[in-house]
Image (tube, rainbow, N blue to C red; front, side, top):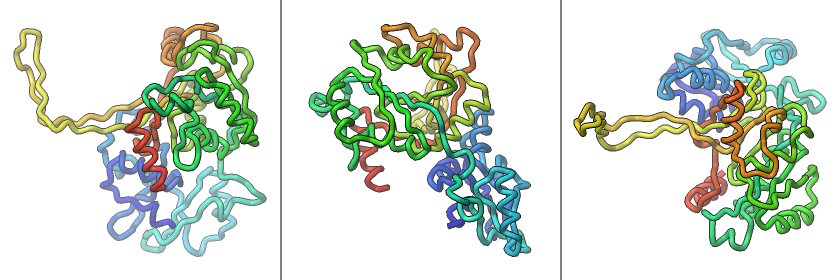
Length: 353
């Protein structure tokens, strides 16, 4: 299994982020051609690099930790486990006398006693799913079914989203509903889920954030807000941990995108004269996924019974000197079902998985 965690130092940061999220181990072992350990690379290392303005095309050899904790084949496993607990790490490379990676120790094999979860895994906060839109981009399907109940594989879109949070111990959900709300409620009443599900009823469309005013003064700490047409395959706890460590009022989860324009680009000045030409330029940018982590006190800024987007809340928080940060995930970790082409791509990815 440890072979999937090996990566060369020449690999670029964006590819490494894909590999981290696919392995779900939060760490890669950077090795040379002879499998000698050069360092370890965690998702935290990658995100600090990105948020610090580092290039996605940069090599992981420049980003990794070159002095990681390692183990030897004959080390006492109990002592290795104690060190893993103390350092809160989930995987440790095992190296031979030549520094070559020959194995790895994982949290679940050394530290998981009596059902103990991997470090910092359990979440204890509410999740709000904005499920009131008409889903016009998915018509004519949404003329019959509300967008949250559109099937994605053998589940509805909203069940995939809710189940992904249940995996992190979340059992407190709110659904903001308007269009075909009775159909959504009837569906879940028949399913009888094990988690608690409450409804925020919009008598009229209130945008992507207007219904949150109903929760003002009712929640403490933090909450997660997500659209009902996005599936995020990333570590939710790492997101919340980042949000709290940065002391953010709002954290926007963003997807890293990289794009090469296959043409020469001409820049002109006001009089139509060419001032520069760039041949097939490359761009890295961040896209809003529609998933947010909010400090509950920010809900006091949402006007009652008014059309209000979450982007308006971000503007209001920033205008008051609040902190709004981002948490980057890879392009492959974000699946969108809100439009027909994207829905088909998501369906294909889920089937292949």
